[in-house]
Image (cartoon, rainbow, N blue to C red):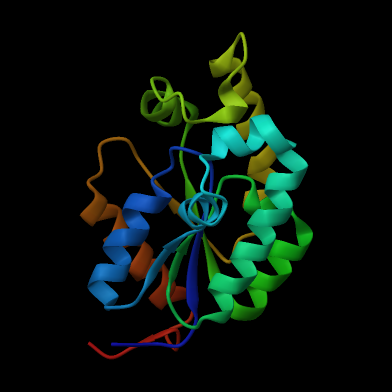
Length: 180
């Protein structure tokens, strides 16, 4: 299969971007990049450590740099952090070099997936579920600007969601994926 553009997965923490991205990359035989993992590798620190030491603004600037580098490396599958799509410059860059796919997940599914994970710095609040609900409400209108929206449902397997993503990409622009 020939892949003409990057496939960039966006959405909330816990939507399944990394798991689905890895499966898409395996099927398409293309490189997979998780921007959060790339940032951690470059900084030799975890994201919570970066947030604690340098703050969210610093992290978001590094995130934009890493995203630009990953997109420039040529057609692959990219999983972004939940906040990456919120920056207009990131949306523009993704639009130039890829197709954006919003993995749209409901609050209950997200909460089920992230509630026991201490690696989510934005949820280190007295009311993490309320924070997640607020972030989802604030971010959803921006996520809705993605080229493609794919519902990510709690009972679905990684394979089922990956199938829906590939079907949605083919429906959106058949030229992105050519071949089998």
